[in-house]
Length: 364
Image (cartoon, rainbow, N blue to C red; front, side, top):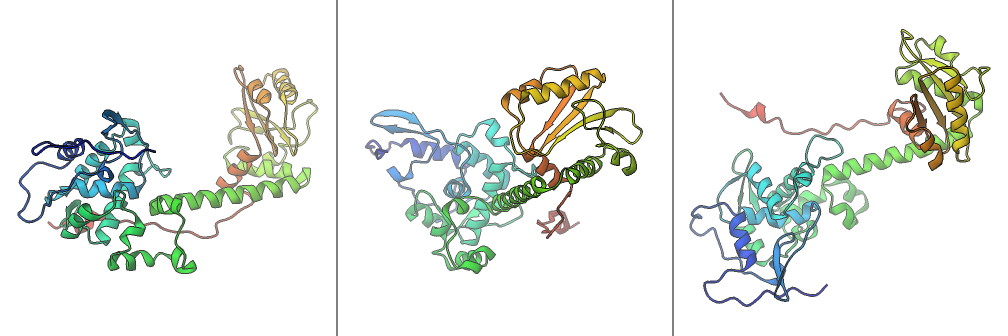
């Protein structure tokens, strides 16, 4: 990528970066001695804003930035020395990166917080631990002299590694268990994720590994055991009525293409026809057509085809656009449902992630 060189400016003129910073920083007279002039330079041109390249105005568009890329814009937003609410800080950072409405509302896998709010929050925490930000009151932020110095002399992208030059932050970050065990620096991809995101990613990796192990065990089991597994899973998901009734669900019927019938609810208001295949080879369309034909002869409205392998594209197409509902459960989905319903697995450890109860500190 060619280096970006800003056009020469005359006294009294402003660069595009300075103009944008003026829009970003709240208006008002800064406290005496708090604000220093931030010199425009090629390294200071922020991502996601218009800038000049070879006398042409271009716009660099980016996705939601990682929390390290958010740190400098957080400092810029409060560089006039005034206190700023966390809500305004989030809005300023979102505007800085020109996030779309969809990006502003994109949520973490937990669904409890938006991605950008989470990253701004962690950027604020890390900058505060490094002494670059001060939190004078609940939900408020203010830059420090050290923060102003970082804007003036620090890198364009403030990183966790760079913050470790401050003893307070180095002590805070060294307390992380992942580093105390190995003594090695975490990978860059891990550093770019917030602790919340790292926890979510680790959880998803553990669940994927568990699902893979379950599928190996299921494929090695006997057909009889697999039939019992199907019954246990359906009961755990709320189907089958009583266990005795469900236990008869997978007994072979005289209808070609149907392995069993199970109640949809405890009252038996409707039934679901089952086909279970403990296969390693891909299930192709003829098998699905055969199952659909059996359902049609029974005047059934709902059927579930479960396999430990996978379905071909043709098989999946065959189950679409029908008057009856046919659900295809492949090996990956089967393992996921087993994990979700604690079939063949159990809870190893429970971690509680807590947060401040701000209402507790409200005084009458």
